Length: 234
Image 1 (cartoon, rainbow, N blue to C red):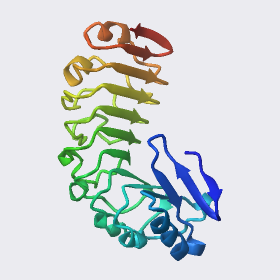
Image 2 (cartoon, helix red, strand yellow; image 1 turned 120 degrees about the vertical axis):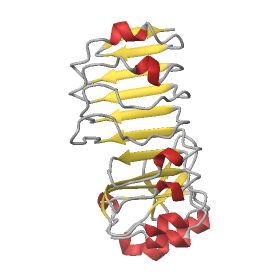
Image 3 (spheres, rainbow, N blue to C red; image 1 turned 30 degrees about the vertical axis):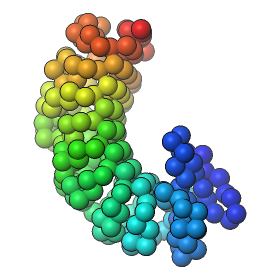
Image 4 (cartoon, helix red, strand yellow; image 1 turned 135 degrees about the horizontal axis):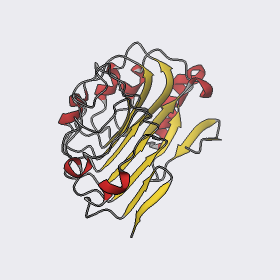
């Protein structure tokens, strides 16, 4: 994010050109009006930028939004998210009520701090990018992790399983990044999970020992970086 203040409002423009306006609680109504005036497609908020709401009720006044990004928040109500019929980008963490993602069928990108009470990710037919943070179930495996079948980009950050066993087959997956999964010892399941994989990065996962052997069984791989070593580059 490259957040700057323009005309007394916080503004961010992402790499895809989507303009987002920062929501500041001290002037909540004015920020909502500014979103409509500019035709901005996104909003964001964090305590460090003046956001102190315990709910997102103001979203109901902005039905054209496509992107929401709120971090370091403590929300008691997120029902207004379901009033956004064209929402494509979701990022709300860390504290919030459980989400029913099946009620947001237009989602294409989800930045998800794992909440075991969330439901419906696997139903999202248009979801192409999923970043998972802090997946640490007591059973220590990926069994039961909901993933949409059509995703093309997956990140796994700060997860506790020792292997990738339990992940479903992801026939459209092209990009996979695994970071800071310090229990991870093996990526041997990758040829089953992602036979079309083109880009692989495994970083800060010091116990992974089979990277060189596994990449030989991924024929579409164009780039692989595992444990500080470039294994494939084409």
